[in-house]
Image 1 (tube, rainbow, N blue to C red):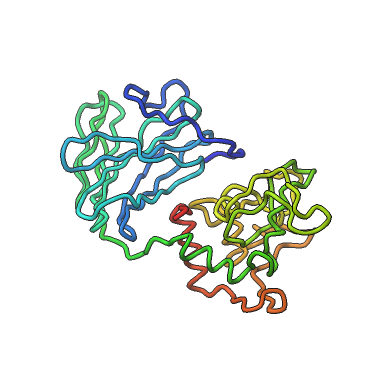
Image 2: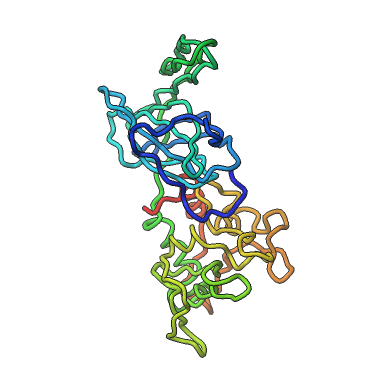
Length: 331
């Protein structure tokens, strides 16, 4: 985890010969990596043990054959899950994760494997703190422990698990339409395209924060109403997905823009304002207020403002939660 503003991702180390340990002042290695089938893909979770990483590199190999690990993807700091949809049922995939900070890297996590068409195959044991002996095999499908350095035996692998039935949620098919129907479209509703130009407020600098706009399209680059209608705001147009995952909210009072809540923090419902205002604690334990008053539950559909608007049902709210938990992919 990292208690700072994300301003960019660290450089991925893809070349042969890049360091794979935490030597040289790298961040602490992630642990407890698990892999399980979910919605036709493989869902990964791990424990973030570092406080200063820029992000995490995820690597994958096919268990069948002699293929080595290859870079799969990178995710921002504070991430602890990833969903791999580019897989084929009947093939077992093996994963490992490491933290990165600038050009330094942690040691790799344990390895975890799964077949997207069946149960998980368990995880490899972690390497010993000295010893050349491998860890004992875990029951129910756990692979044997990795060989350590000189000294103790590696830990046992974990028990394999059965498949899950949670389907992968689509942002474009499941999440975006629900937000538009409930909160507003281009010109009507409480969260129309005018709300996307709040990013130019001078006390925060340009393009930093935004009122929530449910418009499913690129907005923010120009004014839509008022004396500046049609003029450029100085900010780029951003899609609904980009606005949700990149910008901070105007809703929560704070002296700096970086202290204001983000609408969506992939993998973290507790820090995602979008989820908290529809199903959780929108005041963030009293930390999120607007004009001095605690933020309340939303949305509040007003038919005089949004004709034919529909409230978010329990199943739609659950899909929003599942989408965020699955890493908030732009799918």
